[in-house]
Image 1 (spheres, helix red, strand yellow):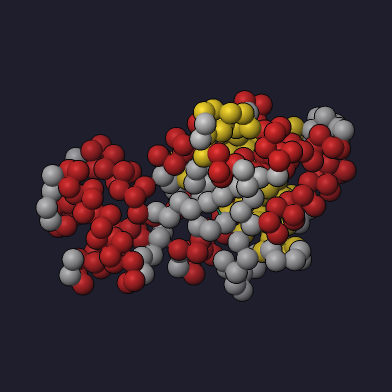
Image 2: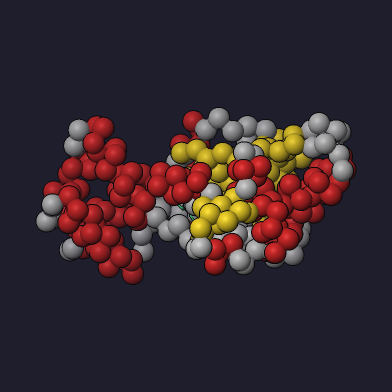
Length: 275
Ligand SMILES: C[S@@+](CC[C@H](N)C(=O)[O-])C[C@H]1O[C@@H](n2cnc3c(N)ncnc32)[C@H](O)[C@@H]1O
């Protein structure tokens, strides 16, 4: 792939997903494209590019969806950033204390990948509400641009070695054996979590509103500064009064929104919507 071709692919990826592909990732792009082109019986980058840009609408959308799954970083894990989950736990205590019986907490995992983040939030909320002894309800939505990862998230099947990293008491309560190497999220927890396709560049089309908790980590790091700000501004507008926005530490700097106040909690980057 020559420099001009690399620039074209970089621009296409950024325009459609927001992700910037650093020059060091050229080899990754080449090998991902080569694998896909072999599957399609194509042997040059330009033909494939044209197919994605000018092909028939439906087939082009389907092909893009396959490719985007290969080009995005989907690395994730349960309770990935402990500091952020400690903050959520603290917030849940306040939520439970302030709200009356029957209240519902709405949470959103933005860029949820295969679902570990959304299920971690579900376990934490479920535990916290149970301990509080009040009848409180919750629902979690995980959204992502990649359809294959969303399909995996919905199945709730995870390799046993990943689940084994979770606290044994939580594992016992919220997972069941699927086979020797796999465990599945228990039905009671899965029922509280739904997954939907959403490109964060189209947040204006997202139906989520009045969210009590928005968790968005390890996705904005691939975006340009101006775009991160645009997205975080939009997420701020989707918070309910008193709602909490949790980002990854260091993922955005010098950002501030008059509707929100910074939450100071060790090793976290979070904001709360003013009441
Ligand atoms: C590294 S994973 C982070 C998963 C999880 N939030 C975590 O912190 O463990 C980044 C996710 O963002 C998704 N993503 C990338 N660009 C996106 C976009 N424009 N809209 C929605 N999701 C996107 C990817 O498909 C991927 O699943």
